[in-house]
Each structure stands twice: as C-alpha cells, then as structure tokens.
Image (cartoon, rainbow, N blue to C red; front, side, top):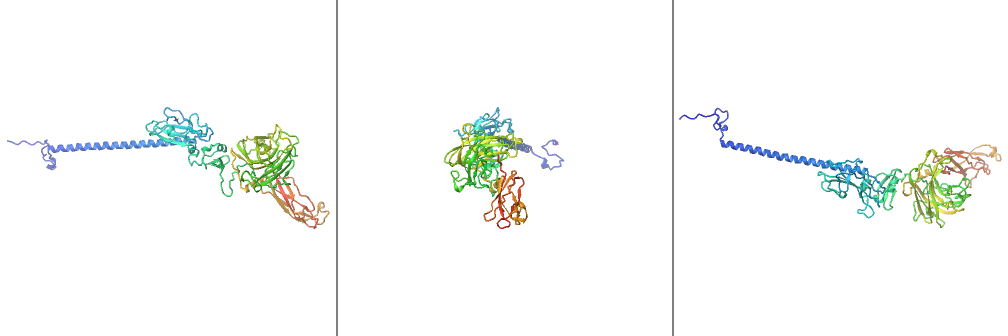
Length: 610
C-alpha cells in the first residue's frame, strides 16, 4: 500500500523546510489550548486591575475637589463675616454694636436671613447657595430689638445677660448638601451637619478685628462717653480722636481716664482749656488782709482768675463794695473729704453794691476769660470745678459759658448752658455739659474770648438779690474739656503751665546804678554838681504777650538804700507793644552827694479785662 502523502497545511504535522527547530514548531493540540486559556486569563486580570486603579483615582480626585470646595466655603464665610463686622455700628446708642440688618431669602437658617444687598460682603458659597446670615440686637434696657435683627441679649432679666461676649452676627454656609442644618440659635455656639459657620461677638468687633479686646476702635469724645460700661473691659484703651488723647476704662471708678504717658513731662495733651485750673500760680501775690482787696472794680487774683468781672470800669453795677481774697494752701485746710490733687485754692469773701439792680447783666464772682471765642465751638464740652461756702450757710450760684465776640462786635455775646446749683459747707464737684454753637469768625474783634463763668449770684424773681449781698466761698480744680465726662484734673508740667500763665501776666525785678554825671536844671538845680542819670533799665519778657501790655514799675528799694534818688517817682509808661522796655531814672543822692542805687519791681499785664 502506497503511503499517504503529507499535507503542508496540517498544523499538527511538522513543517518541512522550516527554518525553526522542529521542537519549537511542533505542538500537540492539547498544549495549544492551554496557552490560549492563560492568555485570556491575563487579559481579564489586567482589565480588573485597570478598573480598580481608575475607581481609586476617581475617588481621590473627587475627594480633593470636595475638600477644595469646603475650603473655599470657609474662606467665603469668613470674608463675609469680616465685612459685615466692619459695617457694624452702634445704631441705637446703647454702647453695643449692631451688624447690618438681615435680607429676605427663599432658603435661610431658621430665624435668620441672607446677607443684605446693601452690604459689600459675598452673597453665595462655593456650591452656589446663598449664604445664611443671623444678626442680633444686643443692648441695655429695652434697646435690644430692632427691625431686621433678632432680639438679642439684655440686662433686663433675659438669659444670657448682655456683655462684651454677646454674639452680634453669624454667617452660615449650607455646605455640600445645600441644606441649612444650623439654626441661628445654634450658630451662637456651634454648627450642625455639614454647615460652615463664622460668628463674631461685640468684643471682637470693637477691637477692630486685629488686636485684642483691650484696644478698641478710635472714637470721638462724645461717642466714648456714651459707651455702655457693660460693653467694656477693665483696662480697655481707646484713642479719643478729637482731642488726640489715649483713654483707659477704669472699672473701679466706672469712668474713662486719660492715660499718663509717663516720662519727665507726664501727660501734655492740653485737653483742659482752663489755665491754672489747680491754682498753683499767684504772681500778683497770695492776697491777704491788705494785698487781696478789690474795691468796686474787677480784680485778678490767682493767675488768670478774675473776680467781680461784671463790674463796669468805674465800679458801677454789680461792683464789689469790698472783696477780700486769699490763697489757701493744702497744709492750711482740707480740700474735699480727702486731700485732692490741688495744692492750693481760692478763698473769697465779698459784698456787693449795685447802683441799679438789673436782671440783664450777671454779677460774676469767679470767672476766667479763655482766649479765643472759637475754643471748642460746635462741640459738646463738660465744665467742672469744686466749691464750698465757708460761712456756715448754703448758697445758690449759677454757671454758664459765654462766647464773647469782642469789644465793638455787632454780634455781642452769647450765653450757653446757664444753670444754677447749690453750694454747701461741704466740698462738692459741680459738673455741667453743654454744646457750644458755631462762631461767626467774621464778627470777631481783637479781645474775643470764651468766658468760663463758674460762680455767679443767682436771680431772684427776675431780679438779682437785694443788695448788699455778701458771702464767703472757696473754689478750686476747674476744668473745661471736650466730651460728656468730667475727667480727672489735667496736671500739666509746671514749666509748661508757667509759660501759659505768663502769656497774660508776668512780673520781675530790675536793678540800676547811675551812669556818668550830667547837669540838668530840672533835677539838679538844688544840688550841683552831684547830679547823675541812672543807667538804662531793660525789662525783658520771658514769654511773648497776648497783646500790648500795661507795664508798671514799682519801687521796692530796701530801707538801707537811698530810695527814690532825691524823691523822683517811678516811671510809669503807657501801653507798649515791644517785648521789653527801656527806662531812665534821673536824680541825685541828697544825703551823700553821690549816685544812688535802686531796684524796681515790674508788672506786664496783657490780661483780658472785658
């Protein structure tokens, strides 16, 4: 039998003439099926691994995106809260801040609203949902509710009580689920669900969002005095903008006190418009039995303090028939219930006479003419001083401030804040808060001033008291400051206060010796040839004066020296405008025939006397 011919297309047979080894190309059928199965399994495994890897990547990418949205939401909520805090203000004047009112919205936290359209704060979160917004009105008494805000904390028995920690506002993001799980009540202390919340308290807002609760925003004196004590903390600082003064809240005193800046110069804010308010300067003398007497006319006592200011130049209406004034030192008496800041004060005993009693004018006992009628014009000010009667009886006096436009001005003068009070034998502080009107500067004349009329006799039934009227008072620690609070007396450095008082009055001593002899028939006819002209006497002012002065020379030569150089009187020049005076003294020594030596006291007066 002839063998069967081999077929080249039979894969099960070796391929003849193949370049590969026979062992490689020859494969049994069963073995080939196994290879295919392994290949398919590998492909399936690879596909599974790819699916797992993709799912993990997707989850990671999605988580990162969600985290980014949450971070964006927190940033937006915080930005909105900060902006609303900046827009907050004490709208009802109770000392507690109120944030802007809530706007209306379709999806809001319970009891809340949305950020109002008028605010510059962001309005939506990172998921496109309108931000929720809660605004509370906290305040003392009944001032803890207003339209567009939630009724807040109060001091009238509500819980919690109003304080610096009362929550003023909260901003809420609904989170990824876009549903507000947090109510406004919850937002005061925390958050619910996936919501994002940012809240601010009163203390956080008043501190300016950048420091601590102990340094608040700069304010005016009027705003500072109106801040409710419950809204402050002991030691909190505020810059008083209109007086450029740093103030500190003192819980013990329940008052704002000026901060002493320390150093050798102390506090030099010059907040007090009254000069020599603590009666430390007495250049005219300490008064007393003979020197401290004013009869009929206006009279200056301690520096800058005028008594009988309403007297006419000739001692007319409301003139003292006699006034006795003197300085009382701390060692000689008791100021207030305990020693105060002042080392001395003014004592005044007086009696009035009046040619024709009138209600038109006011009989002034103690006043100060503050230079410049525009002082504190248009501002609210507080005047304060301490007073008592010293003749065992109580007495009614009156106070006011007067904007005097100057001699000859058609505007005349304007009385502001006229009030009467009772002074007793016990030291009491009198405090008056008034608002000074603006001043028309075009109407001012050279001697315009603000009159601080602290002590005046009061009217009786349309007239001033029946004359003569007598009394005895003691007066000290006077102050006039911007604001509604009678702050502690400003004690300026003594050197600075000296310069201030010497602008209006200054005294000194000059000495002179004779120069070369000369012959003058007017002075020397009786004693030739021993006739001498004194050397030039120069008076130099330490401080330029307010205006032209009345310079007076008064001989004060000791008794062991020849007094007047043959009896010639002192030179009394009139008003001089330069800052020093040249004078000559002429005469002879009638006792020894030689030149004399003399000393003079001089007084330069530039006070306001109208």
